[in-house]
Image 1 (tube, helix red, strand yellow):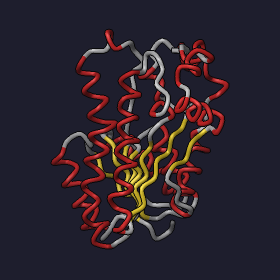
Image 2 (image 1 turned 45 degrees about the horizontal axis):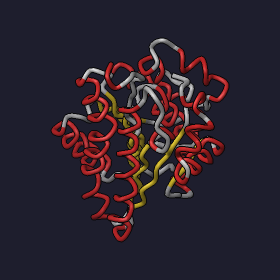
Image 3 (image 1 turned 60 degrees about the horizontal axis):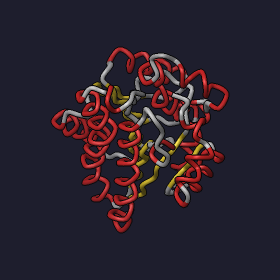
Length: 260
């Protein structure tokens, strides 16, 4: 990891920031942090320096095509190449579809799906030219099991998984590895926006994953690549059952599905 250029989107807070910290602890010297908040990125850079790492701060909006293109061009000029892209940026809003403004629906798709695809398209030419690279897409167990009041968020994560699985086959002959990370709920500020009433967070608090643990496991994929990493395992077991018997699981776990 010491010699790899690792680009992380959505790095200003939440899981993205934890991935950056974990990478610094593992000796990463070439981190590139992307998010809209420059102040938060600069504060995180100071943390990383104290941990013995270094980081390039790149403020920008992954939903803006021109910013994405220019950002990747700047990274390539200054770093020469990109070894790993971790597409982490994303957000959710837990509302019924009928109560979700169309602007929020478009916003979730713009960041969670289209922005992720834009970042991926921007790094692919340089990775293809080098015949190596690793793209890690942070999806969600919500991309496997949809639940009430997360229809739009789940749809965006279904899109991420579909894109990831197709892309993996497209670029395998170019030496590029593509992985998906599908975590359950993580104890991060994600829920401050997604779950404004605090109902879901309170109901699932005892099941929440540690962000540091998810970050460390995500980084393990760089050394030992896998097509998917699912956390926690018991939740992914439910997803497998759902894949073959959705109606049965919906009946059996109806109350658990309605925690929001």
